[in-house]
Length: 215
Image (cartoon, rainbow, N blue to C red):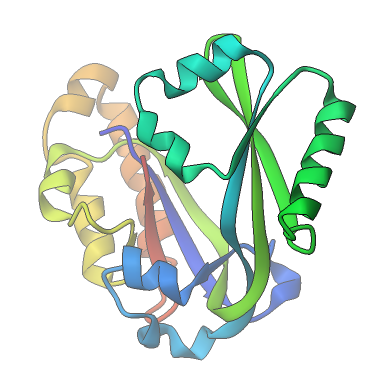
């Protein structure tokens, strides 16, 4: 029941969207409709391939805690740096990459929470490459509201659905049980159904619409 649902409408006009995209590989792994079904909207997109990962920790305690429950994590990491001096860390990373002859690759990173007040930093070493994909506009959004039938009817291996029947099944699942009615009331359920009808069913376009599920 705790799902966010999106209606993504494919486009070829890059100027009218935020240039978010899905690749052919995304469709192969996550969609119940093959990439070829959306051939009218195929374009070339630039994606990023992660080749190696570096982890940064501010202290030994955070480092030990991160690997305490999963020693196998160490095998997936190229190098670990520990320290709180940002400039010093950056210098060490650059020296390491040069030594490993990896300094020609692109770097990207973000901070991720380990537990309350404890953070570590991922540094990804990778490369940009061109591949087949699609771009889209988000034309519909619904926060939660799917009834229990949704989880029975939809294949959990997929996160993208491209058939009209998928949109209809999702709509029908909203009041398929009494959970939302009992917890939020009839007015709330009606609001959910009206939103879904307006922004998902009415805007559906064959070979262009994707129903995207995010947990």
